[in-house]
Image 1 (tube, rainbow, N blue to C red):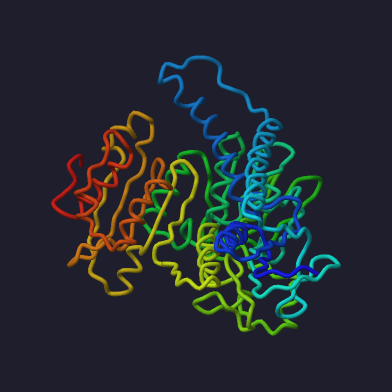
Image 2 (cartoon, rainbow, N blue to C red):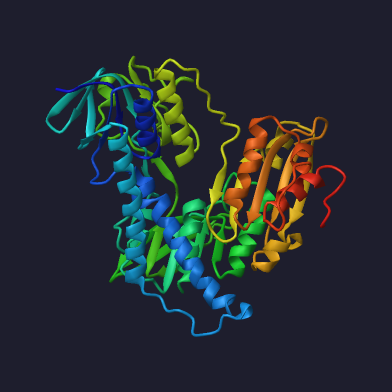
Length: 462
């Protein structure tokens, strides 16, 4: 039996970051992981591999649509799907091996196997039981399906199966117009599939700014994706390697169906806590299956903490990372803080979509007086030169104080551009502070400055 200061269950972004921070702060640390590789869903079957496919398919799109206009003549490249998957797997391997190296560098023990908690202060991995002063659950989340839809990871796939298809389908149906569905749907659309997205609500990417939603859907439609909105999926039947999706339109209850070679179920994720033994321990859970914690990530049982997707809040890798660091620092006697009002969200399609802080609707609902500064990428020299003029930057600021309350970007490198606004919000900056900060020319980031100027006397290039 080994004894530790901290044992973390799960090596995803929350778990492995927490483990490294614990070790850096002088705590004897172990991390439990049952997969053959570290990194959890994100590095193995989520964020990282999907970005590899998004990048490679975007390169194909550029070759097919923009190379000739730039004077790059020649036959468009063909898709070697097997090689593209191999490239994706290589990217996964580089990242997961990187985490393994960081564990060794920081002297974090990897306890290989699936973990459970037989009692407070003890973690069982395989046949071995280890002691720990503190146990941190970072077990993440799993795919959530719909009634009447059985995922077989062959014809009806989750995001995991969508990263390992044997071939690019001719026809694909995506159930759910959220982040995962639109990212992977755009990948296969670029690769030549006819993609139909079926969404229960009347707008894509639920919870995002309404203007972004409309622009985003319109842009994806121009790229070839088809949308059926306000539709409740009734079931999926598979036969002979094909699938038929039936759905009812909410507006008139009429029933329809669509055939596909592949159906991607992208209807969200739910906390994964199976096998941990939380019921017997008396760990308090929410109605949604999340582990309840206090402001310091402590559960209802002394010595047991939880972070990431298995607790309340957005299921985002970077949110889990921040919680992992904060939980570790708290155990080491520090006074950490996670600002949940400044957690960006990004969709890695092309154009990218990024948001932080409040939407216009949220500010209206709160009765907050606000002003809008908006700037189109069509007015940005770098964007026009790079065939990336679609989209805009929108900054929301308090009408009286000018303090930045939120920002919403659709356009090139939106996921990177959002972070100067995050930093500004973290420091309580006004839109004028951004507007008076010199931005290099020509860069995409000038569009952020112009949107900030638009909160005042007006943008220069609009």
